[in-house]
Amino acid sequence: MKSHLREGLVVKPKPGEQKHSKEPSSLQCMHLAVVACGDRLEETLIMLKSAVLFSNRRLCFHIFSEDSLKPEFEKKLQEWPSSYAKKFEYNIYPITFSVGNAQEWKKLFKPCAAQRLFLPVILKDVDSLLYVDTDVLFLRPIDDIWHILKEFNSTQLAAMAPEHEIPKIGWYSRFARHPYYGTTGVNSGVMLMNLTRIRNTQFKNSMIPSGLTWEEMLYPLYQKYKNYITWGDQDLLNIIFYFNPECLYVFPCQWNYRPDHCMYGSNCKGAEEEGVSILHGNRGVYHDDKQPTFKALYEVIRDKRWYATENLCSVPRLGDRMLAVTSAFGIARSPGHRKVTAWHFPSWRRCYIIFRKNCVMFATAIKMYEVYALTWRRLFIQYQLAGRMGEFPPLSFF
Image 1 (cartoon, helix red, strand yellow):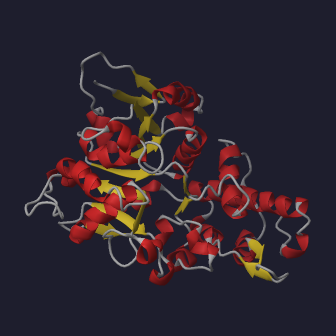
Image 2 (cartoon, one colour):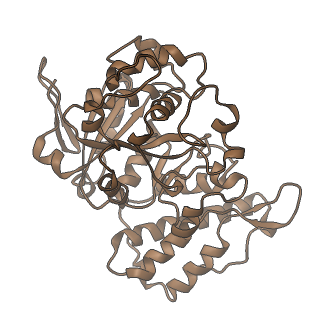
Image 3 (cartoon, rainbow, N blue to C red):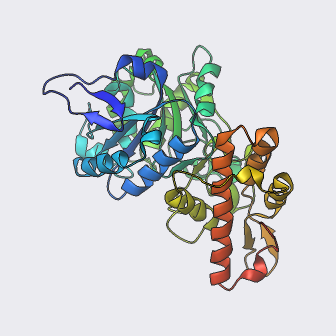
C-alpha cells in the first residue's frame, strides 16, 4: 500500500500498492513514531503538538493506531493552523505484527505497545526515527536529540535512557527475573533508532549459538521469557541489549525525565544542570494529582494557543525574574511536615539559560517561556484552591 506524506493530509493509497514515504520529503525530515490505542488519542495529540511547537526542522509523523482512532487523528490534525501544518507530514498505520500471535502481542503490557518492536520491519524505507510513548512532552526541539544519531559509533543502532540512576532503588536491579541492560536497565519510552542498522544486524541471543535478525528473534525471545517479564516489550528490549550491549547508546536522563527522577529526591543530575529536555509522564501523572507539576505542564501545552500575541521578551528584567522562578518553582510539602521543600523540577533553569543566550532572536524560547509562565500560574491556582498557599513561595512573577 503506497502512501504519500503530505502537509496535514494523507492521500489514500491505491489498493495493492506498497507503503513508502515520499523520498525527497522523507530525506529532509526527522521521523517520529508513536503507537496509540484505547484512550490515548488526546495524549498523542498533545505530544505531537509539543513536537511541532518546539522543533525547527520538518517532522514526519508515523502514527500507529487502531482503526477506530484513524478518523479522529485525521480530523484533529487537519484542524491545526496551516502555518504549523507546513512543519509536519504524517501517515497513519494499522496495528500489525509480522511474526507470532497478533493477539498475544497486542495484549503484551499496555494495549498495542509491542508494535514498537516491529517498526524496523514495517518502515522499510525509513533510515532512522525517534519512537516515543504517548505520554511524552517535548520541552526542546527534537533536532537536539536527533543529533545524537551522529554520535553513534560503528556498532550502535539504538539509544535509550537508563530506567533509573541509582541501582539500589531501581526496579530492574531489585525485582527483574530476566537479563537486563547494565546495572539499572533502560526505559524504552523514548527510543532513538537507526532502522537500517537494526535490519542489517545479526543479534546474539540465548536461544541459538548463531545470530538472528531482529524479526527472526522477536517471537522466540518472547516465548522464552514471557513468564518472567513484567513490563512487556521494554523487558524484551532490555534482554536484547543485555546480550548485545555494544549495540546500545545510553543518553542521559534529561532526555527521558520521569516522576521517578523527583519522587524520592532529585536523582537526575543532567536535568539539574541542563534542564528537562523530554518529559515522560508515566504512572498516569498527567491525569491525577500525585505530581501537580507534570499535570500542570501537560494541561498548559494542551490548552496553549497556537499563536502567542505577547512579546514576552519585553518583560522588564526578564532574566532576574526567570532566575527567581528557577529557584522557587515547584513546591510541595514534605510527608508529615509543614516544611517547604523544592520539588526538583529544573526546566525553568534551562529556559532561563536559553533566554540568557538570545531572547529576542530565538523564537522557541519565546514559546517555551509562555508555556512555563502559564504552568506557574496554573500551579499557583491549584495551591490556592487547595488552601495550601502557606506552602507556596512568595513570588511576584509579573
